Length: 117
Picture 1 (cartoon, helix red, strand yellow):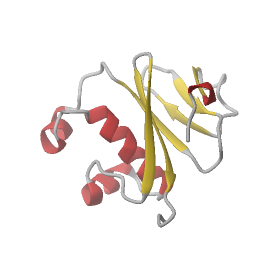
Picture 2 (cartoon, helix red, strand yellow):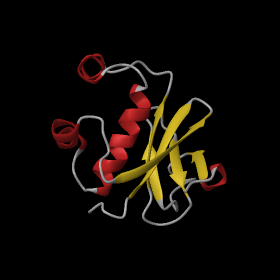
Picture 3 (tube, helix red, strand yellow):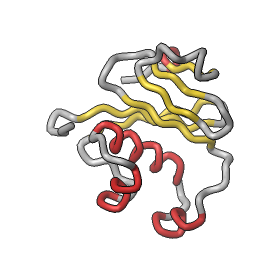
Picture 4 (tube, one colour):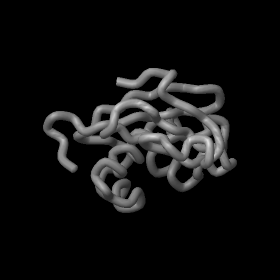
């Protein structure tokens, strides 16, 4: 599915024409310039884990699982707080690929054949 060359990290202005974007709390934005129907979510690997969520879902590979679940929530048009209530940090019906870029974990997701949107 993805290729590193189809990802760009920059400011909101620099990636405004991306197919899908993920805004980071430090002001950077990760843009996906590949095929339509793919959504993106990114997080900074070195940032502290949200204590309550890590206690609930486990700390191991937290940001990778979080970004995959965010992709699933986006594809199903469900707010993340409702998604995790129902599915936790899983992504049923979604094909997810992860790429690590510098200090980021980036998940790209698209619906599987049987997935629904």
